[in-house]
Length: 94
Image (cartoon, rainbow, N blue to C red):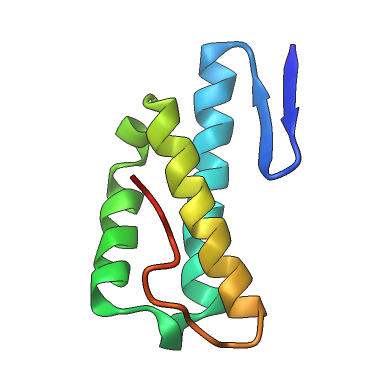
């Protein structure tokens, strides 16, 4: 069974496929977030993304954390493709 959410990639019901696909998409999101607005990323955000990259196997098992990180990466991508204006504290990741 496929779960289709327009903001996030298709997730497959089988655990093995789901984890593999989530890991691939999460890696892509992190790369794109870094590539789309490198000048706007703070050192703390760079460190956070690098930590997330290293922790992908753990992150994808925790679907709540996965969805939050995916949303954060999407926000960074959107900001990088937007007007270049950064609003401090605009991401509510709690």
